[in-house]
Amino acid sequence: MEKSVNCVLLIDDDKATNFFNQRVVTKHDGFDQVNTVQSGMAALQYLNEVEKNSATKPDLIFLDINMPAMNGWEFLVEFSKLNEELIQGIKVILLSTSSNPDDVKESIKNHSVDDFINKPLSLDLLDNVLENHFNS
Image 1 (cartoon, rainbow, N blue to C red):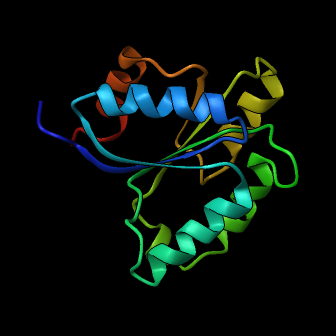
Image 2 (cartoon, one colour):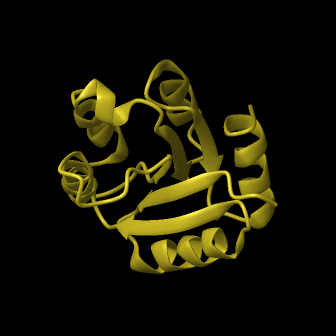
C-alpha cells in the first residue's frame, strides 16, 4: 500500500496510550511519521513549530477528549484560532474511551472534527480512517 498520510500527531495525556497508538500507527503501511504530545498545550506548541517550519505539518491529528489542564474541546477552540493556512487540510479525529452520546453529538457539531473513534486504535480502524478521509 502506498503511504497516504505523511505525518500523524497523537495528542493524549496517557503515556501508555500514546505508546500503544504510536506502535499501531507505525505498523500500518499507510502512515509514515508519527509524533506524540501529552497535552493540548504541547500540541499547540508543536503546531507553532510547524508554522516556523521546524516541525512536520500533520495530515491527521488523533485527539483525546478527557485530558487535564486543556481538554480536547478546549484544544479545538484554540486550534480553530490558528492561521487558516496552517490548519487547512489537517484532519482531526477524536479518539476517546468516552461512550457519552453528548461527546459524539458535540463532535458532530464541531466543524474542526472530522470523525469520532473509540480507543484503542487498531489496524482495521486505521484502514477505515484512510478509506473515509484520505482516498480521493
